[in-house]
Length: 413
Image (tube, rainbow, N blue to C red; front, side):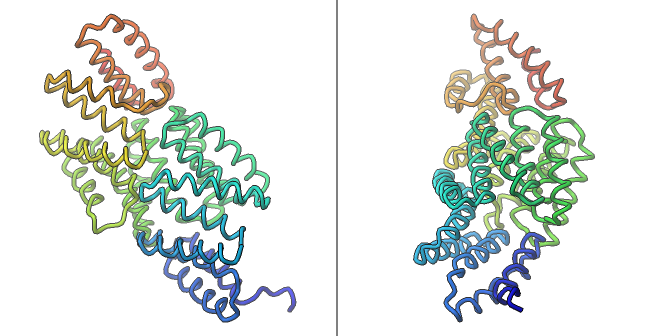
């Protein structure tokens, strides 16, 4: 009997299992029961339990309640000098801050979590923190630094991590490789992630991974495969009450409808994601504005398109999501070119963030824009730009990225 864990620990473990299985209501019941028992004996682990309750709130889209719970959890851990709990709480609190677009504050907390976990020799926690720092660098467009940190995290997790840890890290690697334009490697990473996550029964993570893999399939023109992944992701997210993931998958479905030529369906899905009554991550809202703008363009509603692209630009700049910033600015500039407003197009070009020229977003949006403007103005360097575009076209064709290749080809011709 001496080896039997306390009842509050057993309840906590059941709550964690339920959370990873996306059974959020059940998880909350276990965590609150464990909290009640822990408080009876004034146990120090109440801070950790509070942060699990915060994570439940977050997944249910209750972001204000999640913030309050994370603050309470952090205060409890600090008051009891529980550095191990503080590291974990900082990590998860930072994820909430990143979700709502407070990227700088999130990065500060991720770095503090990494420092604490490393000091405590919590290898898994250190790897998780490094991986999340890598994700921030990715949205900043600092792809080489992101890759360095992601690889470091994977090395640690291969030695100390669980299948769920490896699955989540490989899924993030897939998204990073896609941003770097390494689509074949990206798809391979996502497939490996799915194998790990299915082994772990990680329902929530599988929804996210299927959604992100669908983006790769759309890049390659495999629309039916993308539709299957997104239909599954939306269905599982809805069944398990994962509103943040459901909205994210719905925005990708809106992109898919655009590629299928149904701008009305795309606009309906994008506008649903922009409904302030529904919970959504800030990155999802930003992308929904971009998709809504593209749908309005297809429907010849230029004022509405410009409004949505401008909102995407403003929101992405505030959230330091510079890949979306580049996409939104380039789409605005292309509208100005079509309106023969070249000075405004050049002004927008000057606002582009400094992102790697071998990244997907640069090749898909910035390179074609620069080439079009150079051609129009008769710039002396247009020949060099055309040569660079032709080299880039070969690369993206070899990677199987049909959308990026098509945009470059259109600018060359």
